[in-house]
Image (cartoon, rainbow, N blue to C red; front, side):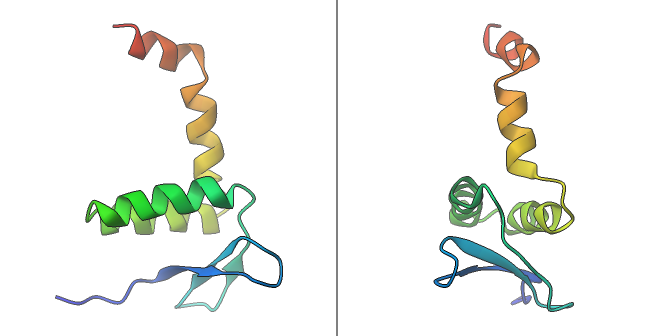
Length: 85
């Protein structure tokens, strides 16, 4: 089954970085942490985890800042406790 992806990452030569494009609405977003977002997106796609990659982009489009939240969690005391077990 070849399902069209709703969200796509497109290189943005005008502003540098990337933009996220929503195929259904035509909306675009210019993520602040674009390098981290792009790296994680490419990792998920490379692992065949397409649904997760689409959720990552959907969260970013919704303004939820998934990369910022992930980095905040990884540097939190709760994450440190998880890693020390």
